[in-house]
Length: 477
Length: 74
Image 1 (tube, rainbow over the protein chains, first blue to last red):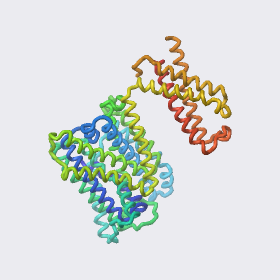
Image 2 (cartoon, each protein chain N blue to C red):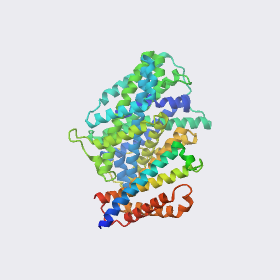
Image 3 (tube, rainbow over the protein chains, first blue to last red):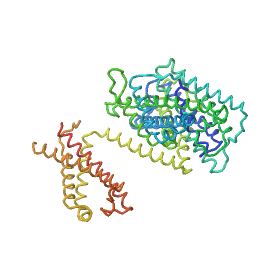
Image 4 (cartoon, each protein chain N blue to C red):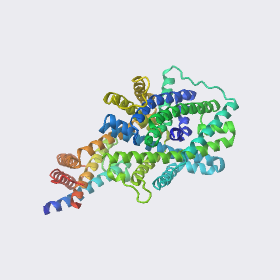
């Protein structure tokens, strides 16, 4: 189940930028570092999921440790990371579809690449409809198929006789920056297994089985990813290609059929990930609505299918919006950054709970405490800063965009907590102030705008402000 | 109370409409439809400032108008 969440579409696309633009062959070590950082935080996840085997995962842990704002932030970050992940998956589907058609009908390839936002939107709409109608995917089957494909790829790669690449990063500043940037960029490939903790209550003996599954999945996944990346960089030299790295490597090793097989696998993985992402998003939104942080309308259940259709539709709209950006690098960084911040919050929650509730029953305890959670937090923040230090424009855009969204999240939280009556008075006051300011600035603005327009706008703003400030009722909605 | 109700309805709609129009003006100014930047004599340096002012004004006007219209509907 852990691998079911973790093995995903990201490997089909994120390796490209990490290899060709950021780290070169040292990408393999970057993936190993990702696995290591993931393992550090999975110790925290294991302890928390065993001690609090409840629905909600990160949101539940941060709520138990810190309550209110931190839990809301964790929930929103997890939701945003999932939205970016879903958008990335939809874009990857279009890319793999384009590659698939480039072999059979090359004329269609350009049309698909140009229509990526449209194709992504169609995929999301279909998956949202399936989610609402309660269709479940065959996760186990997909995992087995992927492991088989990767095993064949690894075995064929070694049989092929690849050139051993130089996978260790050089000690120079540029080399290390690229290496850490690649680590940050590819990090989102590893975080999918945390879906396991969200379903902890449904697992038999969660105190024992969830930590075991998490840690085993982490180790196995790191080995698979590093192995696949090693073979890919050993087969494909650095250069400019318009074909994804794995497709290129598979075509080189096995022939054309290898590339086609990886394209089909990439499409299935993307579709599966979009579906999973939307289920996770609706679950998070539902949890936060239940606790009063989000509008109750998100809890509305479909009469026939019994699914939270409003939450699914709301989430899918955001996925469509972000997939319209179409920039894989930006979406990859945005998904990674969200996950890194969630990981830092989970590690902090572990430390807080150890202090706040020392007698809580803990069937699993994170080893080497407090070194492991502290190392997890430090590494999370290091990974957030390195791509920016490298002046990677995609990372900078993702970070600025993420900070903007966080500001929006904090504003939403305080607006929800402050109550609508106070909000109305505050907005009325702002409007009153704007109206008065406009009246004072009228002499300066006359050359640009007609006097009667300025007087009208100013008067309406002042009267509307006064009406809102003097509103008697405390119940607006 | 009757006077207030009428005032709330008229001012609410007017304020909301002003907000929407301010938003549209910001949009037109940004994309320079019909050479509006030249017509209004807006320099390229001051354009971001005008856009910011119009966006903020539009945002608060729409919310302000919404609260009033909602009161009237209630």
